[in-house]
Amino acid sequence: MKVLVTGTAGFIGSFVAKTLIQRGDEVVGLDCINDYYDVRIKYGRLAEAGIAQDSIVENQLLQSSKYPNYRFICLELEDRENLMNLFKNEKFDKVCNLAAQAGVRYSLVNPYAYIQSNIVGFVNILEACRQFGIAHLAYASSSSVYGLNEKMPFSTSDNVDHPISLYAASKKSNELMAHTYSYLFGLPTTGLRFFTVYGPWGRPDMALFLFTKAILEGKPIDVFNHGQMLRDFTYIDDIVEGVVRVLDHNATPNPTWNGLNSDPHSSKAPYKIYNIGNNNPIKLMDFIEAIEKELGVVAKKNMLPLQPGDVPATYANVEDLVKDLDYKPNTSIQEGIKNFIQWYKEFFKVCV
Image 1 (cartoon, rainbow, N blue to C red):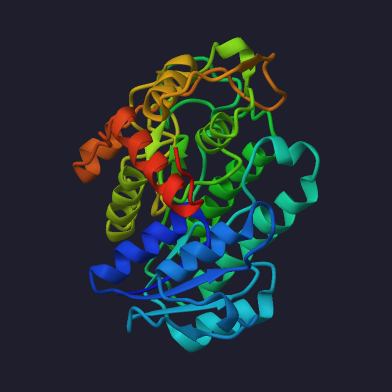
Image 2: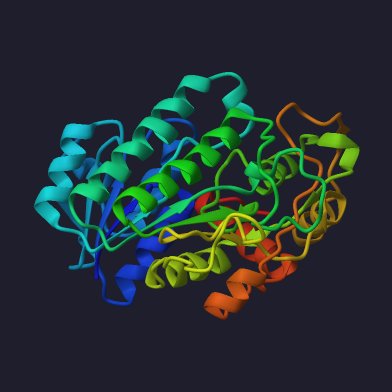
């Protein structure tokens, strides 16, 4: 296949692109490389795929020095004209849209970033896919869409009408927009609700990164909701395996769907939603203990209340993923944390 993967300077996108490249697909990676977090990590991910920082020029396709079947372009999804030109010139078979303005808490202070990237940018992707006959669009949604839902585990058949952050609302809007395009234009779309992704090359604004950095620097860690949090931590390799399987498995219509007793996340349109989570929620204090054990240090802790926009628990029902794609994430938290800390020490040249 020839695949456009957006967000390839990002955490999940960089791994998905590399997996597709290594199995022989032709891949074009896209990212605007914004400064939401430390760009050294973004440029490091690109370098892993053979894209040197000093070679990057906005809106110019660059050939990887490592992979003959990989090229990269620095481009914003909001740049409709150049995005359309890219689709026109490259004639992609499929698209994996993983570019987005991430982060729940940041959406409380900079809402416009989410509207531009996650809504304007996403409709540009949908329009390009429609106009240029893309066979399948797989895109990132989020477990944040479950919002105030307290029914556990979270199922794609659950109501998601009560988001509690603009980030979550923007991701739900992506699902609604995708369904509209699937129905009106027959564009197969599949949304992926990711659950707390972690691992090497992870985002610096996520708990594992923040905790590890603070502990190694001898600083206290901020423990929200007084530690009474449950998270369905999902290792990056498990996420990538799920994404690639979904990308290969085009969404198809459900001819028996009637809107009464049917799964609301299948449809008469070629549209589907999947959870990708470990299906095994971990107590936040157990997660911290695993980090402490791996580092050989007991963390100082600031016990704080639940932050606005956060939910106290996440837990993925992955029955559809198992049924349709014969896949269930299974990496243990101990293995995942060990791999992350090994990467962290190497990348930041930490000696402990």
